[in-house]
Amino acid sequence: EDQVTQSPEALRLQEGESSSLNCSYTVSGLRGLFWYRQDPGKGPEFLFTLYSAGEEKEKERLKATLTKKESFLHITAPKPEDSATYLCAVQANYNFNKFYFGSGTKLNVKP
Amino acid sequence: DAGITQSPRHKVTETGTPVTLRCHQTENHRYMYWYRQDPGHGLRLIHYSYGVKDTDKGEVSDGYSVSRSKTEDFLLTLESATSSQTSVYFCAISDGANTEAFFGQGTRLTVV
Image (cartoon, rainbow over all chains, first blue to last red; front, side, top):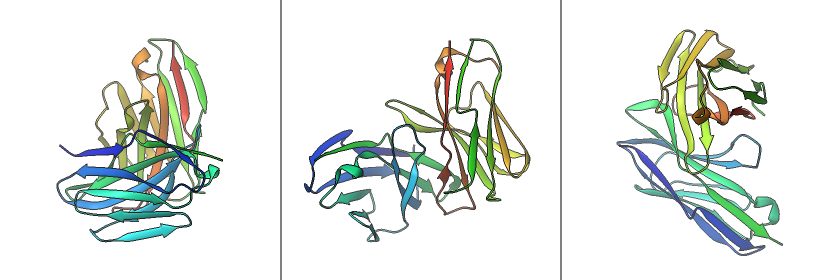
């Protein structure tokens, strides 16, 4: 069964304190892994797509990496405006019509 | 922002009544999805569409039906609402396999 697990569930950081969020997955043939940011009361906002192990993508203070079993979202020197819930999702080769989501990591960055 | 509009944004309904949520897109994307989001469960796929009149079930489809008569509109119907269907519902669109999905702003549904 395809599964996506995110850890930790919640993370509190001081402004400037770098850390990483984890997304581990089990899927029969990964087609793509996606990272989203979700602010309270809003829909998820697309951040990155990763397709193969070793791939990396960066955007401002965020950097996403991918291995064969997991993905990391590294946050360097976070600011309070980075506070949000971060979701990851996977698409499988055998059924690329669907996206399977993890439960998310709620990040709180304190000034 | 992707042109996705969900309506209504908020709705309170009584147990046993039918409810229809609407998703409208202006991007001409082929794929449309309905998800529900609940604490501790993340986003779960209810139904999706891969073209006009082409739909399929997701992982939590019981009690829900969908219709897509035009490329731009995807309707989600709760035939007889139950309290367990109280949730936030999100519509998403994608222009094809292997590409990211873009989400609407969500509909908060409360069944009392």
